[in-house]
Image (cartoon, rainbow, N blue to C red; front, side, top):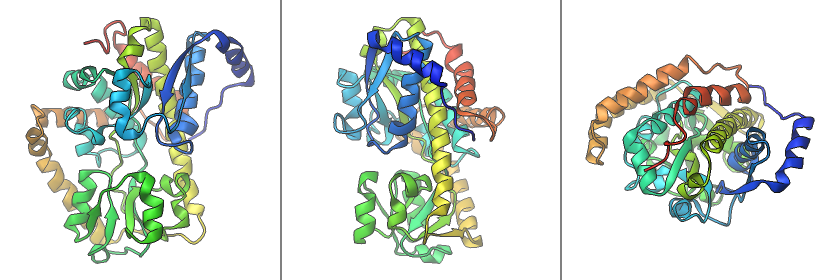
Length: 366
């Protein structure tokens, strides 16, 4: 995927007009080295200035102002006006919106999954009610590259997972590890490096980009390429309703469009870092053997069959119909996203297919 850069002339014009801009106070929230801080939010800022002729800009505080587990109330109260919201941190508040996370192994790429999740949440009345009830306006979700086993000891078959302590970031991954005889461990991603270094855990179920972005290549020795879905539970483009209420429909559309461009840029950096991880010295990449492939296939079929019942238990209504709608959106975006798409092209098609079809005068209103 080719990275898109703004021309020097355009960047100069943006800088000149930004002096009198209305500034959105954002908190990407996962540290200055995270893709949100290095790629997504800078692109949103640049595009927002471009699309509003300098009337609006965005200033990001990557960490320190609001912790990820504080983001929901921070957006509600206007402490931050835009931020990355991790839905699994707030399961009671977003049961409907978390539905795509329950079937995160669907889809051929993170770009496809990200677009399908975004369209699903933006056009789901129950999901919109959850965001509205928390004083927020949903604008986008990202999705990581495929999840693999990043470990201190080699995992060459399911037998090697028995007794292994593996950090998992969602119930789906915990269930898979447990089914293979491993021990799932819950902890924030910020604790991964230290926990791996000290032997508290033997590995993590994570995407390859973490090897570069969070320096995990300094501690893990093996990557078993099981490719068990993605993490798609982050509403990384979520605005405060207080901000939304003081924006015109045209400015709202500009922010929605700029956010899709930001996601496009994030997808490019995820891809870049995942590829760069393969050049890490001393790291062995292990293809999944037949036992791991069979275990994954059997687990996914069983997990998908039980997804509707689990969701209904959490309060989701008509869960199977909603899973079917999400599955249809995956299929739609499989036909729209192409491997050679630039970040700009991806951002524009996301906007055209999702927010460009919504009424910005009423979207996000209770």
